[in-house]
Length: 220
Image (cartoon, rainbow, N blue to C red; front, top):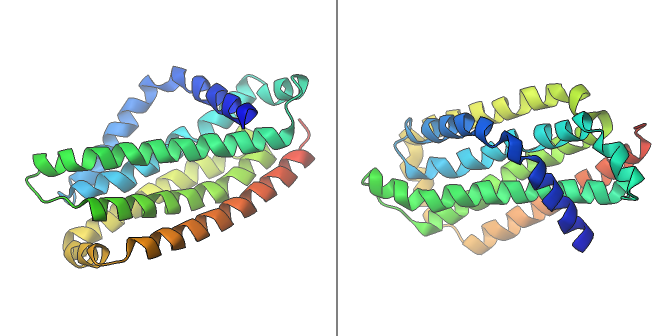
């Protein structure tokens, strides 16, 4: 695990120069999630979606600009370790972004003068991680096969599509949100967690296996 953690640390350091550039999309997502519904819960899926913006396109773009794929080989870092490390970084970004959204939710509830339920917040967190995790599982093999430039279509199409869908769902929640929140409030957390874990692990395992094969075949 130590080599993987070092790789993740390297990935995270490579994102530092882009921190200021990410403030604007962060604010846009934050406002777009809260204003249509006036619900504090919208910030959870919104910030989970934010990890799509700071994830693959920046990380693989850094690889391409700095010819890091070649450097990894020179340093004796196996392609399988690169794949596992990149998946770990992406998952970490998703978890951190979603956790920030969950942490902000009760504060927003106070500002909006509305009630807040940790039960509903936790279930939305699990759902957001699962959905965005499935998007990452679909995206990452393309990046490992094609590289950042050739996979740019994926980066251009997928995050905006997810954002639009999230906004549409948020708009729908403004009309039917009470029924959904009531259902979530009375749903067994254990059942949802187990189902989400099973789906995410199955998709992530299949995606990781495909990415390993595609990256091994790629001519760097």
